[in-house]
Length: 281
Image 1 (cartoon, rainbow, N blue to C red):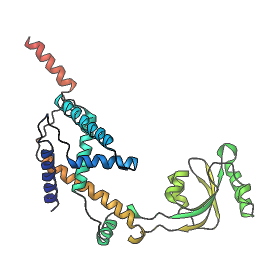
Image 2: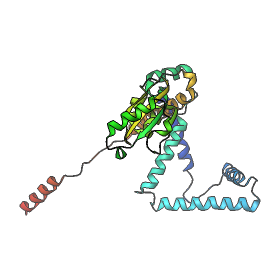
Image 3: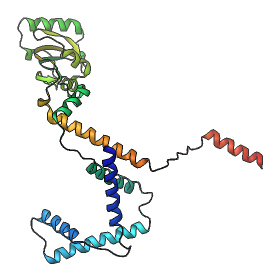
Image 4: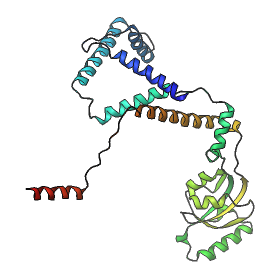
């Protein structure tokens, strides 16, 4: 069914482009719909319809563009230009997206998609914690200083009075594992999300140095219900589905071409050919 729809869409697209290019090279027709489109574009920009002289200038600008475009094509200026080729490719891809557009997927389709890609929608564990930074450069006996600071915290010292200055915040509230990793690195994030709430722990090490950590709350990671993340699931599903259909359309188009890939000669081959030529002389 998809191939039939894509084929029908490509047939219509080809028919429209053939019809648009059927005019004689020296005949430019400005249709009523094109005039209405020019007037509508003017109205969207200036919030009023164009006057007669303004509309005449818009039409003349359209004709000028068409003249330049046809003359450029006649001179072959579109050939071997990577920017032109890229713009034409993008335009065709946009047309293919319109041809392969689908309606809103059902809950059953999205639920199945979630089950096929569980890691994409898994909710990360989140933790609230306090962190006190220990700069290794400021502690000659790092192990002894850490024990002393831990003892003071257990004795009731205010966390603000312990640790070294840092740009990182001291308190994090229900931070996700990825958010912690952005600030401290993956290794520390993996350790923090597994800690049980309660006591001070440390030192744990990140790319910045040492840290004393106290987790105050932890929310386990889980797979959400569809209703919680439906918009995200639908957005991801439609994006992948559009890409699949575009790939199918491309493969259908590619079947009409014979592709020959000629490999460049290696340096050894070129040297051998030159030597054979000298011998032949």
